[in-house]
Length: 95
Picture 1: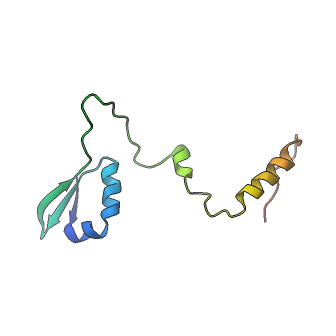
Picture 2: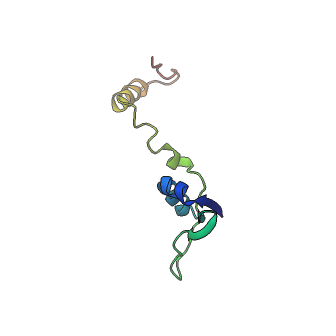
Picture 3: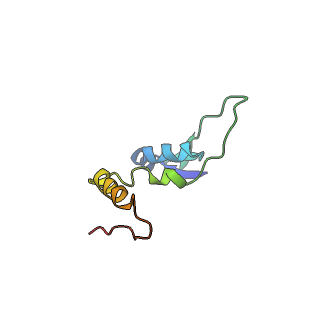
């Protein structure tokens, strides 16, 4: 269980919620003494709990990765058009 002073908890509240959502518990301290434990909500009875990854992987890791690519659609259309009939040609180079 992670221990965190109240001031740090207030400053990093959204990060704490992200950690709790991953299943972690956080002990909040005020003047070095425990005042609260923040943890995930228990699953309802009879529900099936799937394992939660610690870090995103697979397709989840791609979310937002291409958000800054302004000409993405045009570049992909160009690649598809140039590769449509190619058999042994290397992919186009981008400068």
